[in-house]
Image (cartoon, rainbow, N blue to C red; front, side, top):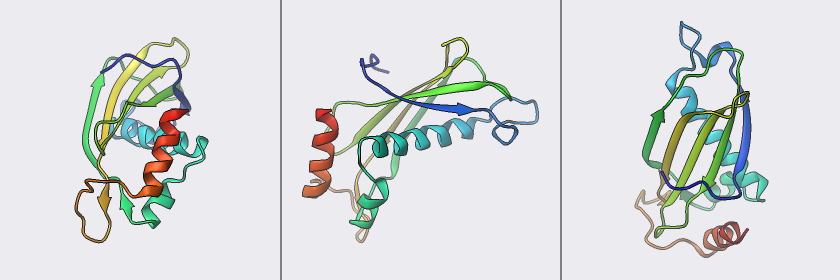
Length: 143
């Protein structure tokens, strides 16, 4: 995982019973859902609509997912999903996450998600991004 940039997107979450396993500890799949929610909220906060890209014919499937657990979160706790986009590597988008216990600021989970743009009709990975998509990303990276 790379160093955290000065500016990250923060997405608060609360641990509800349906986020946990039988012992009241956050189920591993919940972290993945929170990361996706934070990613879409990040884009929306920057004036970008993920659904618009999909309608325009570009899908962004997850091609790599890594989670590193440091400590658990339990039912009733509050957490902060901190998300940022890594500098671009070709057409792939690399997202980093630091999910923290909001009360202590301690890191509970570190995550990385890599997305690859795919043409929705052919299902092939795009080697070049469509102009509109490229403009959106350029603006995002400039902010």
